[in-house]
Length: 257
Image (cartoon, rainbow, N blue to C red; front, side, top):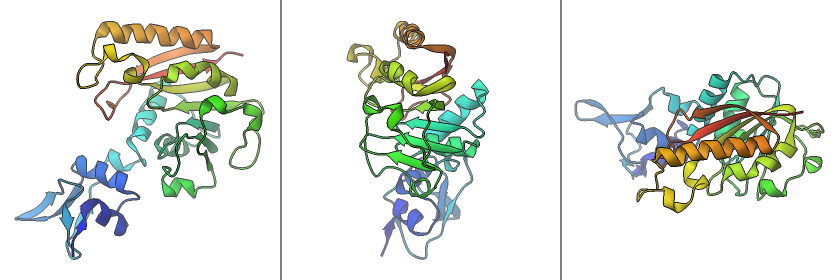
């Protein structure tokens, strides 16, 4: 009896999750036997038989549990932010791509805030350096109530806050984020134009393309950050286009004392 390709990859221990399996298949990084040699698996639902080989190619896609990790990695590299030994806050933890990147870059531990539940990659969920507060909105979070994975309190605030949110405007939370950051703490916030701007700015495919809209967004977000107590260090184009095709941006800032 055959099994879906994404399921077979997980069952054989080749990948951690079906989500990653689908990403690898879409990237052409999963091979199986075909006429004349190996051929790419083309669909997540493609039937795979028990004796049919599967091979996953080494690629950037496999580096983190989600492509968000690759986005953040490029942003941190460009901004010259050293994560070594830092206690970090991951707002919008989801499957944990940002958290995975932070740990790979030497963060000591990561506390996550997530409105959903059951999304975190099992490997990260089992990591003692990681704690996710599920069913929690960042607006309802207060620094005095938080505890890090090791049980300690981030009394002075977080040295590093990373943000990846969908369906809300992340820039509207900059005041709240400032209350959670330590003086001199760094912020790496993913800005998604499709959620920051109204529907009039999106074309029929949901993409924001007009330079006037994007330039206006940049000005507005930077001003909002400055008003919230952040010193803006950079505005970066995200190295990877969003899953829906929108160009995203990283706001890099430092909490003023």
